[in-house]
Length: 342
Image (cartoon, rainbow, N blue to C red; front, side):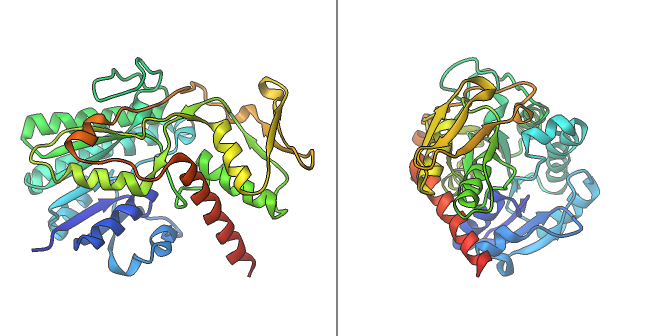
């Protein structure tokens, strides 16, 4: 018999890719989305799956709403991908971030405990919880040192998931996913900001890209690869938490160089500190500038994950390389630009 799944945050990058994967596996998919004046369905529309999903308005801060939703949908599996997920915004809205990204997890776990403890639950944890890293690379046993309200809230969600697993024998586990990007990434995130800017500069719609810390390093993978791992976690005999990562770290600077190269620019760096600029070697134009307003109050300089446990126990491994990911995102933004111009 086909399984039923309920995905919170289905309109986000991971929710859209996960929904597509589970539809292909024959699941009946219910998706929860947050009420907005203009619903944000572009990702599930771009993947051509909107009509195959049963969409429900869901609020992680309303426990009654969550209990009714689980009673109505009767899911075998629940994937909690909903959150205030933008680090920069968490410094501007720390209380809201705590309510949604931390306490929202408790509301969902409590709903599972009340409705049906046989439901398997996945919690989206984050590599940002490692923050000021205590060892390199980071693995499941690495101590956490969060450096933003978002990361602190994610850490609460991570530990409350473990607590419910141990207290109420619920199959609940967390995936500590390192940065994962795709053409469906929101424009506010640095990777998509870079690829979109490269395309807009190429087509004359933008003069230059303003960016923050060029030397921050991240372990970037493809979101389509990473959602496979989170499905695999809920297919295990017992719940365990896993780090999901490529094991390679690349700087923001490298990401810019590759993205702009795919758009036809070769970047040369001149200057130091906040005065450093990225210049197009061919035209001599300044295409990248540093803007201090994009620096974080507390920076996370280096994240690189060790996913050997996931590779061994789940049989998971990433398929898309860093270079392929950057190229995929630039090409997607070029297609979007061409489509909008026609």
